[in-house]
Image 1 (cartoon, rainbow, N blue to C red):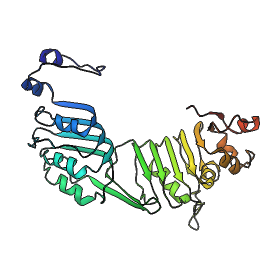
Image 2: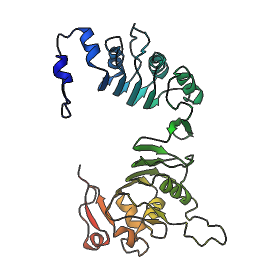
Image 3: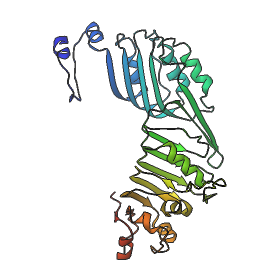
Image 4: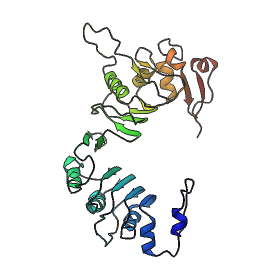
Length: 331
């Protein structure tokens, strides 16, 4: 069995069934494991001593909740790389993740990506420091720059904190608020913006500069916009007011105040590339474009593929001519 599995690579293999194998054989067969699991308890079982020789472990988990404890709490001394991604994380960080990481004394690479909900306190820099301080072999542990953005949403009565290491390696950055301080995120291609407070024009300039390769942008903000134009210093002839999104191909403005539709469609504020797919409220779009006749929004709209909702039966010809292309949203 070992000779067959180790003889070549299997790039198109998506399933493997191994039966009646002795534990010692499985330990020697697998030094790297990449798996997708339904819940965290399966992850714990995979680290209960059956794969003690693993050096690399990548796991994608659908959800993490308070789970039953696994008796085996031995140190995972051979593990050098641990990558965890989870879509939903409920009230289990202190009981599940921290004890598991405490067993990984010889880690050289660590990547954690998850959203935690239902915790009464934010996870801050001190929590992260407590985890990595005992990982003496963690590569570049002193060179990693941890950044945090915290926000309290009084209307929804929730708090949010986003902590990440810099440079940021993920392709998605979600729920950016006015507290976003900027930076350069060259790996990110999908961005979402949300706040209970208005976004100013300068905020969109900061977003465009921070995410130069952004392809997808979703905006959720129902508050009227503040400071619609960028203020230039005196004796500065540069046109700082126009926001440019050179790689944008998908724009979601469905849950926004009309001011933000205006922000993206007026050519004095934003320069859009050709063939951007736009999803938004049709009535608001009609108001902003003055029944699809305004010259100030015509240039950007001529570059847009407008997808209208099923509440719109059909579009008149003058509306179709106003855009690069139009079509219904396919459900």
